[in-house]
Length: 99
Image (cartoon, rainbow, N blue to C red; front, side):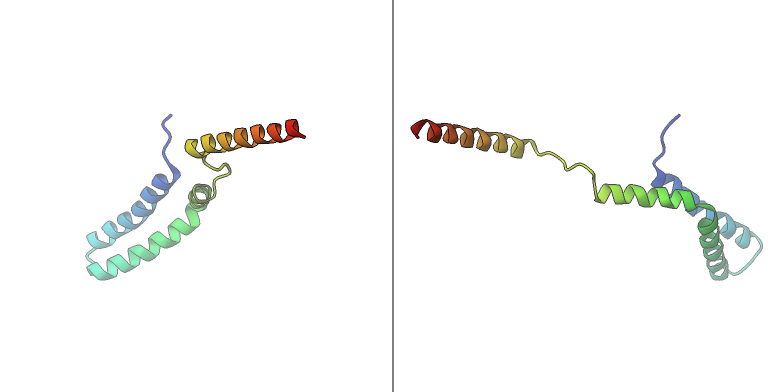
């Protein structure tokens, strides 16, 4: 089974919940601006009622993207930290030998 990102799934469903009522209203001969307003309201209501889990999934993914559990490790800073620790270790060994 192919994995579809939840933001893509949610976005496609939201667009469909606007486009389908818009097409129906336009085919009935309603004014285009009135059709767009009514379709937007219908799409908003349907997505609020039917897409709660998808909306929460998208919100969770956005939160995790902004607040990762693990900090990304920069290889350069890791090397620098290990060199600094090695220098401190040799310095403390020298001081202990001299005393």
